[in-house]
Image (tube, rainbow, N blue to C red):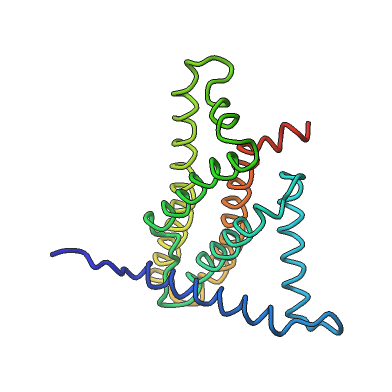
Length: 212
């Protein structure tokens, strides 16, 4: 029997996308320059943190990359946190979802690199310091993409399995501390994925070299 196209992870992921879109529209239409509310202040602090992180790695034209990195951080964080709701599972505990996210980063690196340097200058980097280094550069790109996907998947799936086992063995009250650990892990893994994506894109744009 063929597997369904829309898996539970896919449906949950689509719902989270819809939530992000609705929240974005709400923020744009309701935020005020004067007398901001608590929610607006939290969102502004989050945006400032993301903008600062991007600017540190890409001092030249950081706003080109800001939408992608910001979206990845917010989306992955919500995907990680939704596993805390009973009956729901984190989409990032599904290898297909994390692989799709890693592929976005994989294609973003040459996209932003070519935009920043031009296609010839970007491709030339694959043959530095010698032309026979080309396959090693390609293998490095593929390896770090696989690592991105497997790291996020492994951490989130193991966390969900651990909580499930504790619930079966010890009941619903004892895993409270473990749920708190899940919360910390969810934030940490979202941050790690986003910062690694940012570093990879920055290296493709030679932003790190320019900083030195």
